[in-house]
Image (tube, rainbow, N blue to C red):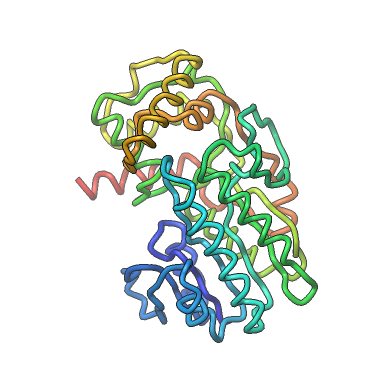
Length: 325
């Protein structure tokens, strides 16, 4: 099939493009800078907020997989709205105008997270009003736009990979390792809350499966994860270990972490800083509350099952760190 993948410079977008290309699909990638995949794919450079660039990228596609997003922990609302909301609206408009029949919106479980524990949870409805930060709020608004555009002729599915990680990851793994190297990696509360994650290969496979099955799933949202929840402390320890670093020794009470996150977010906003603060309210909540999801519906709907378990994923990550040192 002829597929457009946005955001192919990201870990996840690039992995999706590679899988589609490997199985013989005609792949176009669209992002702001060269993708560096070295696959000889058709490439369109531009910004998803630029309607003309989007129209050029979508031309000729039968399927759109929209993975491009502004993914940071701080920043002003207009910047998130421009990329995540306006960019998604542009892609939806261009896709409908040019006859695309399947649209996969790569979302996030944070769109339905009000800050409380999620234990074996289903994919709840996206809710911008209860979202915990500008990233989550903008992704929730964009998911609503996307699913609201679904028709019989234009199948739209939202897929929400949860905490994607793997070799080369600069988001979850990169941030944890950076803090560990600086001696700033802390356990919030007891570290006993169960959270689930998704190894990169599994997330990419699930998104490809979503594109294949979109015609049967139009208008639905599906959460994707490894289905192997583990205590936060265990995950932090394992990430530090495979990176050759000491496990976190700092422990911060939950109330202190949330209060500090609130203060630091306001300070970063006032100073117009876009680097990561040591803690945010959302990060404190994520590290101190359970969030794992019932995967039975997702696996039935997609005919998919994670191919790489946590132990194998950490072994691959350790090998990557050793090769990179």
